[in-house]
Amino acid sequence: MTGREHARERAPGCQENGCRDHGCRDERGSGTVLVLGIVTALVVVLLALGALAQAQVARGTAQAGADLAALAAARAQRDGWDPCERAGAVARRNGTVVTGCAAVGDGSVRVDVAGERGVRVLGVRVGSARASARAGPASLR
Image 1: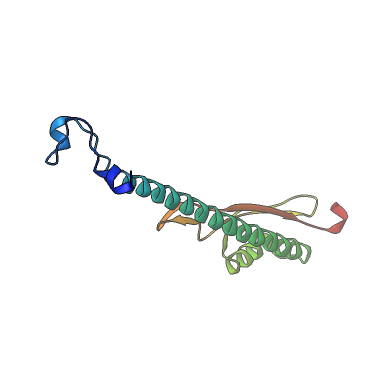
Image 2: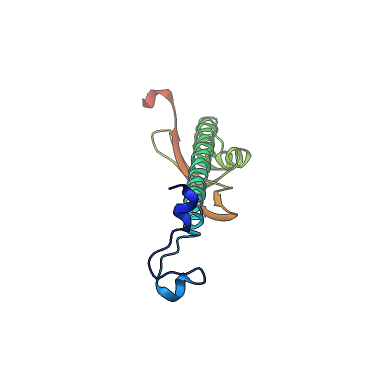
């Protein structure tokens, strides 16, 4: 029996005019539904992977901004300047915003930052990257 003959074969009681009327199974279009389901799942997975990649880039940017801001703040403190003001200026130039800055008594400075851009999925912001860093004299190691 060829594929065409098999496709034409109907269950007992079915006639050309209507499987619906006699309770026959008509599977035409089920492949389309399956393909649509698979494509939808792939789109969701790709969107999730894109969001994860954006999150990783945002985290790296935030950490770099925090590191540089902490180093600048430690140097400013060593030179007698306001460390948090300097940290804010350096953080802004690196695409981050200082959310916390504290000069510790041992000569080090801790800086907390948040990324300005954040992570977006389909144009909707779903989060922002945060990072912190501490810098000070080499004698603190």
